[in-house]
Image (tube, rainbow, N blue to C red):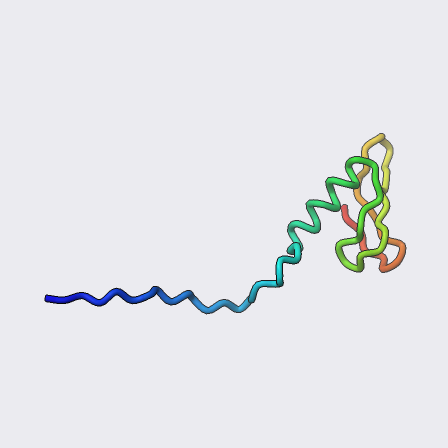
Length: 73
């Protein structure tokens, strides 16, 4: 009896690698981390400056981008 070793084929994907760029999840996490630290961050939509939004308390409740109008809440 003999056996032949073959290489396992990788499953095809609908979403090829993006060249090491951060994904949406990572962009949102970075934005929230900066906003919670009371800092302006890069907007995850357009890359312009997103500033923290405040409610009745001292902690930010989200952020908004004046360039594209995107909000995180």
